[in-house]
Image (cartoon, rainbow, N blue to C red; front, top):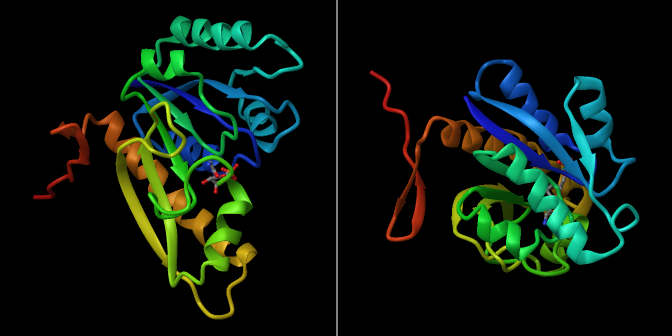
Length: 210
Ligand code: GAR
């Protein structure tokens, strides 16, 4: 049973999808903690309802950046999670946390990285940029987190086709829907030790059915 920590800032639909997969027995893991920067977000509300411990780390609670970052690291060291899951977390993870949890932090991004990633590309901004660029497809990417925004090794991607009638809003809905399938699958694989690193690139080992 792997120990998981989820970070989320928004509606929390990915967090819910992951939790549902745990409850149904698909994912062999337990969520030890939800970390959020936003005490009023949907993810925190869901954690309350589902009885999942949560903590708020933000500027108003910890005004000094160094203390805020150290507190985050200390909390995580107290849990020693096997995996840290960023699920719509809109803040940058401090370098000291990234370094300490190397290859143990994953993020989901609502586009086909390396396109439409980096600073400023989050949430609806991503979908608007994809639409403005006249792309024919978009999708979701799960990647490991390193010190640079959206630059860590890609672990899994799933595409969606952009139809002529799509808007940034309808694209966001389509992508979110596939995120709810893709992210639990990747986390399931992680919890079953099916993420293999070769030449510094991660790969998901598929289950061979007899
Ligand atoms: C998701 O689409 C996720 O990919 C995106 O925010 C949304 C969160 O939705 N993440 C980013 O943009 C990170 N750069 P949720 O709160 O309903 O899971």
